[in-house]
Length: 535
Image (tube, rainbow, N blue to C red):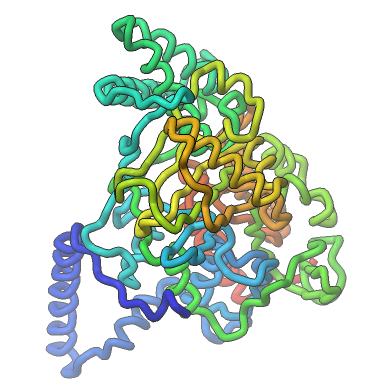
């Protein structure tokens, strides 16, 4: 595969930290070895060291392994499988509905560049981020390590006019202060309800506009409402559906946002390498999961696949998206899930964010100067008469001089997915011509786009905190069934980004959830010294 043949370069800007960490570890290990050699007169092998490290989590090698089925080979599913393997449980099978691993991580080529149809950024380039450390293990991050700079780009109005830079800078920083105030609402708590994120931000923008000179207010408003549309893209849905009070429940890791130059899918390599052979079955969608009293056969759960195959298991780790659960939970589980679980599925928000990649034979922009932010007015955003009003920005694709990427979200993205390629290319070309004021801009020679909403295996992009959402809903979604108060050991375990308070809508959240559920099975296996008894 082309990605694996390309040599990658070790990143530099955390090299000193890792080098110091490695040096401390090496010195500690050397002291341990020296002591062991003095006491026992022999050196400890590297394999022995690794075995000692694994002993604390590994199951008894003489006990029977439970049978585990993992639904989905995305970040959560692969992380769960990898953790089970590390701890000595290899009696599992991953059922993946698509023809590829990765889930909402989907890298592919367009011309000479790698494009990300789904997840693109590692949010928080720091050691506590387990996805960042995965990328580091395989040296997928090149030096220097470029970080996402959301302030880059030219704000242009729908009249085809660029907003003056001083006004843009002031309006940008004002909006970031408003956004931080919205995030602080969650930390402040209290009895007062602040309604939707759209209302909170819209009111604060109107208040802050009075601090601008009168001749700058028009452009400042357009910049800030354009940034509101970008925030809408990050949430994946209309901000009138996002809770202002819960917006700040997201935990932002330090280190900035970094992109894997040769494809986000590369972070899957360390996980896939560590799995047993033939443990993943692709093109294997699940029809129904019968559990507890609803199961038949010799297991506590019976998974029926769409091709008719039936598989027994002791545990089922469900890693499908929240969007799939919203659409299919009533048909996927027999008997139905508990009411509290269904309430969590219903009340958590699930958004849609799509990308449209446009390739040109000759670029009409200067390299690294082509990012275009659409400075829509409040009136234009309120009256969404066509799908292009869901487009918030058209950016250069990092690593390419020929490709632009349009970002679109919400209902407009869903409408775009249903349109023909020619109509989408026409709409974006007219949009570019309108906002740049240049009617001569060419049509793209090639276009690729994501379609996360119309894919029945995803039904959208990622979760958000809706007006009826609380952190307790995320906790409930991640609670196994039967629950902790039930005498029967858990059968259904739930993982995925939507189940992780604080880290929802991220790949590292998905990874943490997979490890969490694997650890749950490991502890139960130790408790029962094997699989639990069938119901």
